[in-house]
Length: 189
Image (cartoon, rainbow, N blue to C red):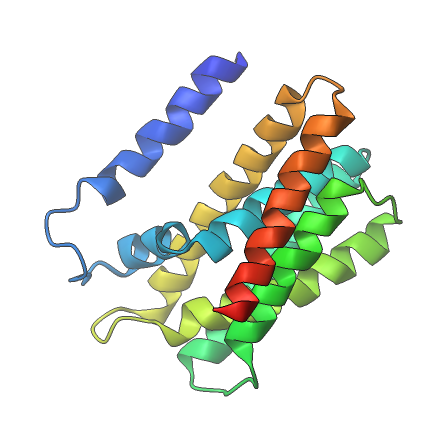
């Protein structure tokens, strides 16, 4: 499958969520979960950065790092849906955006286990933030599955962006710095 066909498939998969007629009134648990990561720039930037960084790490990290993020994010989401409070979640989310942006900007090379630990820690905050916003009538399992699916799509988007840089390290640095600056703005705001 070529990249354009793959990208078109991802866009088509997102269309049902975009076309949902009752914005903000999600009773479909999976759809509510799927749409949540797309509702905040903080989540979009962090998840795309994870995919971008994982691809630049290469080897097994290309699939282990995103898998670690999705898995730990699901745990954080479950904890959030069941009301376990985390201190300073929004601050943690903003810090993760800044950190992931810097990892992309400087093409930081670490072992796969260290990278998985870093993104797993980030994912805990993002998952908790998703989980605490479970709509009142939604089923927690469907909601978590929905935001896990959206996260995979955002990671794949990061892969695609990493591939599009065509070896141009300056583009990666610029994208990473922009993501890191967005994290700083989120911290300030």
